[in-house]
Image (tube, rainbow over all chains, first blue to last red; front, side, top):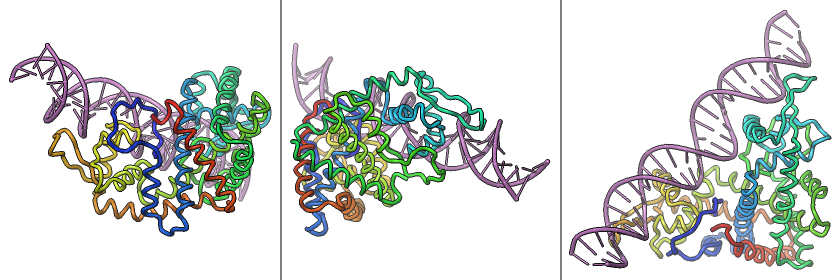
Length: 184
Length: 184
DNA sequence: TACGATAGTTAGATTATCTAACCATTACTA
DNA sequence: TAGTAATGGTTAGATAATCTAACTATCGTA
């Protein structure tokens, strides 16, 4: 179920068709208590979905020449422009990556003219990071596709299902966010 | 929203607290049609969840010294042991990665004595890959934790919600699996 | 004023993939 | 059936995205 880049597939596979099926089967054979099976099954399904959703996103973003973490950075800057002053440290903290990684990311985005760095006058150790007009233009070009991809994940759900799903998502959101030691 | 390894966080951040909130806000400001907002919002939530679910999984697997793709490989072998003969090509196809990557993965797992390679008698180009008793033992040790982590993702949902959620998952599953050009 | 903390960068390592080229073997075809 | 093409697996080398540790400059403070 690992994430993968999209390869052209040639061989006619000898193994059973793809998908999550086999794993579900394996689960049926190995799950401990019978009571847990259903939820294990659903969890597995979620895991599988997660992999695939991120793959979908990668595919959608590829034409724009950026990856998810780069978009994250741009969104973050776009979000804060004209409000808070954004420093690399704050970005690192916010995105849950190391300062060194932020430097690398900013270098990459900067080389393309999408972000700017300016030394702070007050504290000359600090850098204020901003998004350039070109960067903003890129974001504004990417976002519609991004949102519609997000939305398209829900195709086929009727309005009742959507309503419940939304409530569920909020709960899961809680669930994950309060989980200790994960995400930071 | 990029995936990240788990870093110890020190700094008291200047930027608003983490989470998906800011992105939702950004979405509200930039989503095209108003009608799409709700679904964009949910899609975004799903994307965020996906990142985090995979992070959770990474954290759970870390103590066993394996990663998701390595577990995938072992599960695959475990699943087929005593049934189909499994070749590296088939694995590559099944997991959606390149043959070269399978070689690397098998080398890694083989060095630890968890998988075996044996040349086919029929077609001497082929290799039959198997899981060793040690490999099986590892899998059987990891799986309970794996399943319970899967299950724990659903904590807090009541039985009604679970029922609907299951139906929804199936639909999403369909949705993704029939999507062209993704996953393979 | 000197020492420790903080901000950002650099250098180098790691991991997980990929592509392209290669060798051995097998299948096909003229 | 000899010669060519395809297949299965490996190797070599590249790339991307992270990480840690060490470094430089600056700042706050005892």
